[in-house]
Image (cartoon, rainbow, N blue to C red; front, side, top):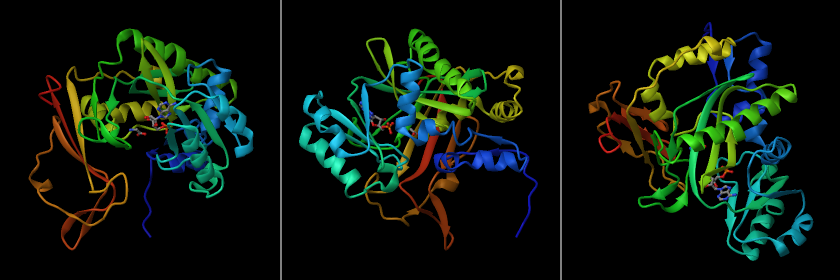
Length: 337
Ligand code: AMP
Ligand code: GLY
């Protein structure tokens, strides 16, 4: 066993947040950046997220929460198509099923309720209208009643070039995202971010950490699709390239409750990352392919190779998950990046 003196814990993934690691560390008097268990329900429960939207008049798709197929039979008879069926809890990005017709919707519900495809994450289901438009990510640092929005970003969801194939966690991302115009930016802050922040203050559990809103944008309107209680992957990578080492100041100031004192400035250029994934992702993948050439890449403030799913095996660098590396670069224009 080795013991370390930990000054600050920054929690990356959603699962420990939703399970309450922040509350645990705070009890041990360890400084931590991330939302507590209750606030992390914004990501951990879609029904909770929808309730927040309703209570705080946050624009989102019309929805119904149900615990049994029986509850929604009538709703399905009269709903608009396509319709979106979502497991309530965390499902590693796989719990959303877009159904083109009622048979598909019934299949999705059977798979969640009867076959328990998502385990207890499927004890409840949210059924909601399909939102048309273009998706963008809006990420901010929130500390109680203060918000610092990060610069805009957008990830590329479909697995294939040309926006084809299955939805993924993100095959790449860039920043800035032109879809988030100044007008949309203001709307997202006023209609989504501030009401969410205030909603949690009203419930007595203010938010601390990165708050990520996934939005569908159409006709100058932004509607909330999801919250993440963390940074986005791969949105994080281009954003970090434009922020550099100042991110540490931001994390420390936030966890000290000094967000007011924190000044950050962003590189006034473009950053882009491309994810390298194992063959088969987002479906079944084969682990262990050998990765060559990473050592020859130079790392600098303008280009960086981030590791996501790599491991060392017999002196080789190998791929050990779906998304493996993200190659990230900055440039004066997006094309240059
Ligand atoms: P979620 O886990 O709720 O973010 O959903 C994952 C992905 O499913 C989103 O990034 C969207 O691409 C898609 N999606 C979720 N809900 C909707 C919706 N109501 N309308 C259209 N697409 C959706
Ligand atoms: N790129 C989307 C996410 O991190 O959930």
